[in-house]
Length: 111
Length: 110
Image (tube, rainbow over all chains, first blue to last red; front, side, top):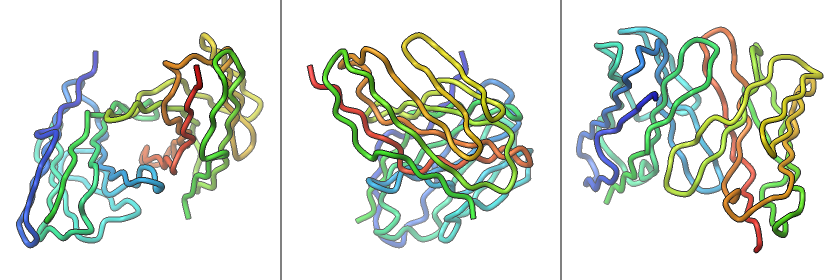
C-alpha cells in the first residue's frame, strides 16, 4: 500500500514565524503536490513537483515556497506565517497520469 | 483558467435511495477524470478513473459517466457509511496537476 506521511497532524504557530510542513511518500512517485483545504472552497493547489528539484506554481502560491531535494520528500514552507494561512494542508503523490494518494493532512493554526 | 464546479453542493438522501451528483470542468489539457471521496478529518481517497467522453464505469454501488466537459456519479442504495464529500478531478496530462473544486457533501439519513 502507498503511504504518504505528513510531519504533524496539528500545528500552532505565531504570526511571522517560519513554518515547515514535511511530506514523505514511499512509492517512488514522480509527482508530489501540496493543497490547502478551507470550508466552502475545497482543495486548492498551492505547488506541485514532477521531479527532484523541479517545482510548478499552482493556483495559490503566494506566501508559500517548496523544496524537493529528494524524490520521496516534498516540503512546504511558509516564510512568514500569517493568520490567513490557517488551514488544513494536504500533501499527495502520484505516478504519471495515475491517481493521487493523499496524506492525513496537517491542521495549521496561526495566531 | 482551470476550474471545477460540483452540483449540488449538499445532498441528503434517505438510506436506500440513489444519490446523484455531477461536476463540470474547464481545463487546458485533459488526460483523464478521477473521482475521490473524503471522510471528515482525512485525506481524499481515489474511487475510480475514466478516460474519454462516453466512458462509463461501475464499481460496486458506484456508477460514473464521463461527458465532454463533465461527469456524473450515482451511488445506489446509499448507506450512512457513504456519507462523505465527493470530488471529481480532471487530470491534465502535461504535468499531472489536478483541480478538485469544493466537492459535493453527501449526508445519508438513516
